Image (cartoon, rainbow, N blue to C red; front, side):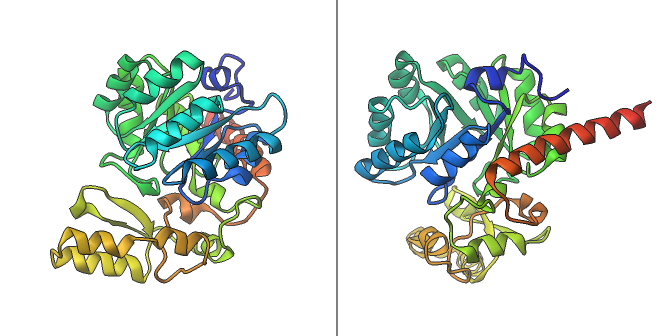
Length: 319
């Protein structure tokens, strides 16, 4: 079935389940990453714009919380002004796995691969996937625009099979995956694993403000909006006063500086302060499928148990 012994993602990462937790800025900290890793997946700390000394402390904290033998990862957002510092922290701390996003991972591969670090770029196109494979990436995360935070232009449904056909390295599917049905769909599209972000916002160990979690739980099918398209860096969030103001400014073709200023500090406002009106509630469309808060381990186990049941039903229909 799905959890085959020869699953390349599990063998590459050393995990029980072929699941990677998304590197969500301000959300993916040591507590969340350790819970996911201890639950059998790959927990990931988000470097985002974190100062290097604080990031190093967070990595050391995760190491102390994760059970021996279980891996964890660090996500480096390459467009961040602290990306190079995060890279050096990853090298110094010998982080087992690094995922990258928002830029070319060439420097990351050159610096970390010789140290034995597994590098997995997040890509939004076939061209990007082929490029990073040639550069030496160990796997790729094919992320569709259903995902939360910074997104591309292609949906998971069309992006994943094209990338799976274009590269020989393992493909991990991201964007819209929140339950067993999504896992089965990802594998049917050619992926060998999944990356999940939004679902883990609503786990016991996630330290975001409860208002943020409740906003995800209350989300419906059309509860998200895409902002920042005019800037060339679209971001998917839950609709609120902030997204409405973004839409107004963009429709009026306000200066880029004014639009960018509107977003300053808003993710922290949502995650730390629980501001659901003017905070940036980054979330994928899969929020509509999240209905309860559970431990990370339970979420993972339920997801793959449900996937096996879905496969069984599909087999019965086919028969």
